[in-house]
Length: 268
Image (cartoon, rainbow, N blue to C red; front, top):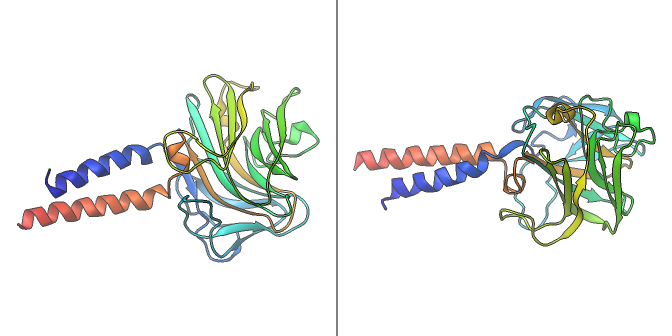
């Protein structure tokens, strides 16, 4: 196989993986207030801080071989801190996956939440009408999740054992069958989660409406403590798509390399 053809084959194989990535946020912004920044891939609009305060802080959080870009965000107030951004186009069937890095300080953590609006992105609200529709993260020393939390009978869970330090959280929403699964510190790479801890497996959830995508129009960064860092938010349609690096950069790199290879072949 000649070099350009080989490159094209590899590029197309990689593109199939990248296509499953829906949104990525590595917080590649200047240090300072998160509000008003709007980079990344797949998300729309800018980050708005609805409660508390979030700052972009130098250097990414890291976990095992997970590839990272940009910086991280750190909560600045001791009370509730929530930042919101539109998730862009998301699926209403099949599987919806999400991942995030959480830097849990003294076992005080945070997480990622979803809702149809920016007013309901609190994972730990006592009032279920004001809780995020879907969310997962760390609260104290527990892994926690809430599913369709604004209904009269919310589904939620709390599993002890969350460690201090950086934790890689991955969640799967089987939209078609209404099932939720969650992992902590799975091995990056591969087509399915291996290693780490299985926190929840096929927990059944219902929705007040039939449109799952409408329920996750907005993503929220959430914590109840200052100093907690969050990073590397990925949304996708399979496990591989939420453990790969930022997709557009790699795809553009592939296109550039493909063009260079073809150009070099033509010159020979």
